[in-house]
Structure formats: structure tokens, C-alpha cells
Length: 66
Image (tube, rainbow, N blue to C red; front, side, top):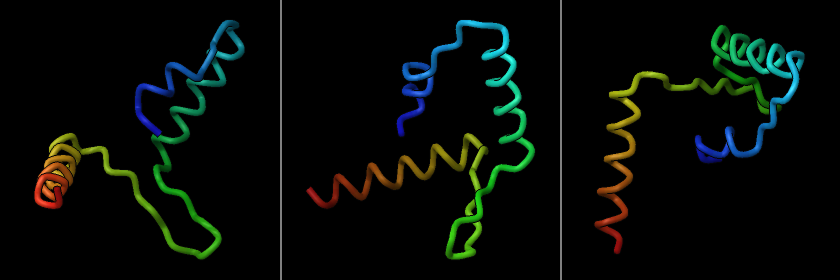
């Protein structure tokens, strides 16, 4: 899911919805991993430099392929 789609698909029109959204963001920040059925742990990278490097690597790979 693209990052911008979170703002496109979420409608916050009451104080209760705003509070729930903020609570969800705070909870995800405290525990940025998800345990899936096969028991592997996935982490979320939040370092902008690492994310930038990953995108650059993907771009280079796409250019090499075609």
C-alpha cells in the first residue's frame, strides 16, 4: 500500500475517530512488528537513510532488468 493512500482512504470526521486514529498510530510506534501465522517476526524500518537506500537499490535493479 502506498504511503499516500492512508490519507486518501481514511475519513476522520469526529473527535472519537481522531482519538482512535492517534491511538492506533501511537500503538504501532510502540510495537512496530507483526507476528504472522508462521511465527516469523517482521520489523518496520523507520530510518529514512536506510529506506532511501532500499529504494535506490530497487531502482537500480529495475534499470538493469529492463
